[in-house]
Length: 244
Ligand SMILES: [Zn+2]
Image (cartoon, rainbow, N blue to C red):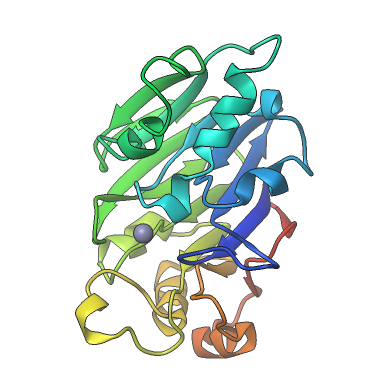
């Protein structure tokens, strides 16, 4: 399994970084997880829009799904449209982004497969298990497994005992770390810190930790320090590639 980070900026993109966007490849299958703001231009550095085999959304916030719209436009409005793109999303999570264009304009560009977080499914070669994790909107924690390796991704979440199960023994734990040490009180049930991400990584016994979704302007070194994870630890950055 190969993970290519397209972007890992929380909330809004910056001059140097797109919002969430993760290309996960195995056995020739290309799964795009969370095409957030500005992730499509980054994706195009790594292949064409036709080469995406499926999309998986953790939740419906636009910093995790907005660039589904230009991706579908680029496929559906081309001279030789590829087959409909399978889009896997929690119930209702894709509604807003799919409503940006007039009804039916992109209807042939995608095939929507909605699920309830907690469901399991197969997406190409990936055994995909999900957990409903606490966020402002329903969010699916995602565990992608092949016969060789496991990638666990939180989406956006507050603290939950389910995170340890989601990440148990994973080769890579991709964890949101919106804040470094402390989440503002009102948001505390719905977002994580780098410190908590490191704690979950230790509890789950993961091999490697990748922090993502840092609030724009956050010092990556501060996040790495707060995580205090003994194994390899990075902050998601454009074009970072991790082979598992
Ligand atoms: Zn969110």
